[in-house]
Image (tube, rainbow, N blue to C red; front, side, top):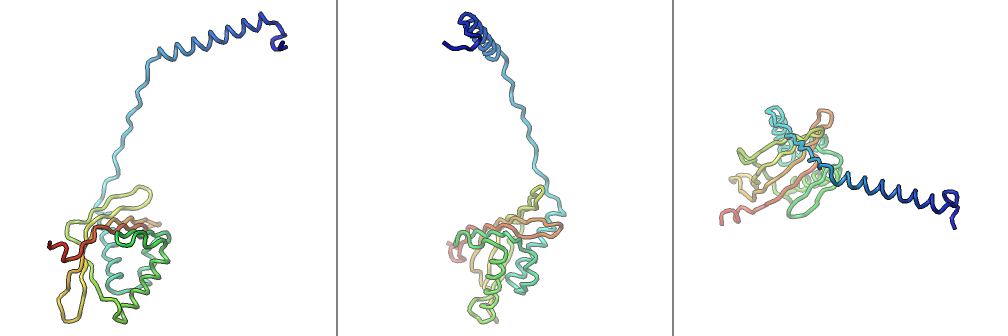
Length: 193
């Protein structure tokens, strides 16, 4: 026989009975207590300002002017986040770092110079760009764009259109492209069908 509670079985039984009564009465009180309703604490997201929209529109123009125009890699480098990720509907996850993206852009620019790749132009579809702030990070830009092949002495030839989503990081006042999702690519001849 156990020596707990001084080895007195009667005392042990009384203590056990008191514990059971206490537990049962606590449960009964809890079951009868009115349930609290969870508070509804909603908050609106941040509003887009004209200043933010203008800043992102300027970054968008500068980015595509470099990528499809000047091929000035030194100007492109500070616009790209180190941890850039680029998702493309044709290729999946095609870029996993800013350094890799810059390296691939340098190779592309070289292929344009040798004539291996054609020169192109990007056109943002008027009215399609939307900008949304991301608190404590930067902004999201969405829109639609068209791409044209350029050949000397010929009119620009529409090649394809696509949708895009860009995440811009505000890195101490410097906007950097951090995420790209490029999707819904349709060849020009598919659009007309």
